[in-house]
Amino acid sequence: MEKVRIADKLALFSDHFKPKIVGELNGQHVKLVKFAEPFIWHHHEVEDELFLVLKGRFRMDYREDGVEREMWIEEGEFLVMPHGVEHRPFADQEVSILLFEPASTLNTGDQQGSELTATVLDWI
Image 1 (spheres, one colour):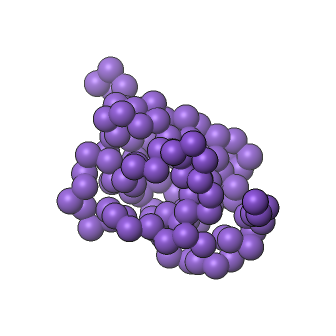
Image 2 (cartoon, helix red, strand yellow):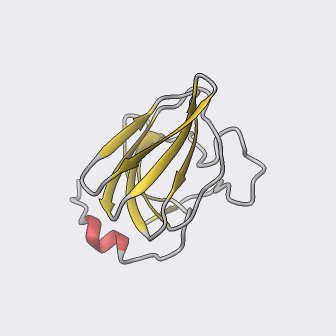
Image 3 (cartoon, rainbow, N blue to C red):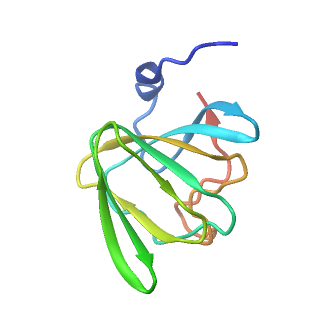
């Protein structure tokens, strides 16, 4: 058993849209990710995702009932994105996020052929 200092882990990387695993429990991964631009539209068939803003803010664009919507998530806030909802995270300045999701979850969901798909994640 080890404690994790999130600030130390965030200092270990600067690349965007490349999640890093920092913990695991009950088949779930705790991941850290940074980004500063729009991601791709995608959804996850069976996995819900938790996005917790550690530093900065981001906008979650999503499509619900055929209508495109958006929601700003501020530092210290989190959002649970339900499976099946098409979404696209976007930040105009760098944001640091903690993700909590099933270990099998790919960052690009149904868009697995994307150049942004991270199939092998680093543990840090």
